[in-house]
Length: 180
Picture 1 (cartoon, helix red, strand yellow):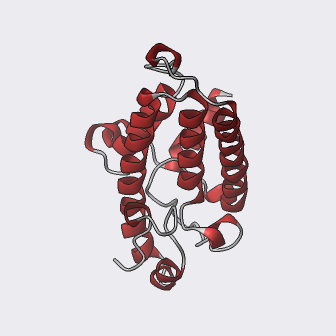
Picture 2 (tube, helix red, strand yellow):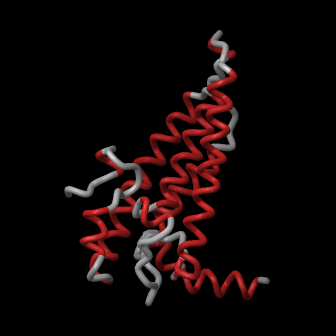
């Protein structure tokens, strides 16, 4: 098992030097992972502590969004296959994927993470989790832009794909920069 993990980390391009100087976007991944893990924190403040009853339909809608996010993440990961990497640096020799989840948006895994975070926020009614959601939106927006700067150099068709397909969430300027 350790050899398999070491081989996968090597294939993704992880290195101690990269952790020091962010050469493959390691710092964006660290920020993303910290925000995701922080979603395990309890609701702070909880709606009950503020004297607010949190409506069951909102909680259920949050759970549904979280579940949808997980399904979309699975679809996006399957569509990328061996090209999947947690770093914003594309894997060497990876083909440009524009079908399946990637026909819906250019970063369906980021879209899925945002939906999961929104779902947790709605299910818990937590201001802390709302802040984590907003932080995740910022980090994933920057991470996606870094990734795209490299993809446009590696794939001649990327510019046309970028113009025709939403980035993360259609119609939201920070999460869809097609006209940029």
